[in-house]
Length: 262
Ligand SMILES: Nc1nc2c(ncn2[C@@H]2O[C@H](COP(=O)(O)OP(=O)(O)OP(=O)(O)O)[C@@H](O)[C@H]2O)c(=O)[nH]1
Ligand SMILES: [Mg+2]
Image (cartoon, rainbow, N blue to C red; front, side, top):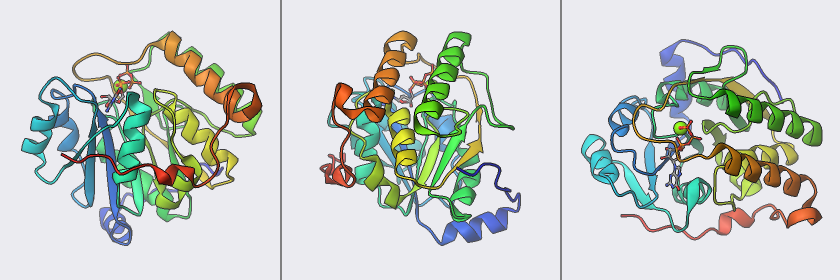
């Protein structure tokens, strides 16, 4: 993993680089109508495709998204949980570069250029980090920070990585990484699954300092204990496959059936 790639502040350089690669943004949503006006209006104009993967929201999430961003592609997830939503979004994405971020206002789409630059600089996977120098979080609670730190340490020990963050929903990658990720989990363990599979595949990972804001409106769907245990089980299963199941083989994730678009 290489960390600390210089990020240019020259917007024209960013656009020139970005123009060489089509960029898809995948956003999972579950009742985020109140937050979408903030999120969707902060997307860089040069993003090629925005895919909202909705978990059958009972509020106006889809209508609000379409009103603000008429070109949005809306996909209904075919299972449950954030992991399944991201798998559906990745299967639907056409871009060379895929960016994943949250819909609650905590991850700022205005940071997308930083992630893209890190990929254009030669890395395979741009891994958002709240705890790399320059990153921060006003959203994470003390308990979750402690849990995240312990889980990061465990991953770094077991996978010989140098991650500073683990359970963060803001990442970007070149399309070819999908063959190594094959997202086949349901819940909030999805970022951990992706991070360890990308690391295990020997792909070039660079951490991107990111500022996480507080969720703007609505409630978190995450339960620290339940989801922390799911993350722990994922780490153990990925490192010791026979202990708890079979991590998939490279390429299997691309067989995901294209989800329904509405
Ligand atoms: N489609 C879909 N999206 C989901 C699901 N669960 C969560 N999300 C979305 O995933 C993103 C992250 O969920 P959050 O509830 O904010 O979880 P979190 O960011 O880990 O927790 P907080 O920091 O407390 O907000 C948000 O955009 C949610 O709307 C789901 O089951 N289906
Ligand atoms: Mg959140």
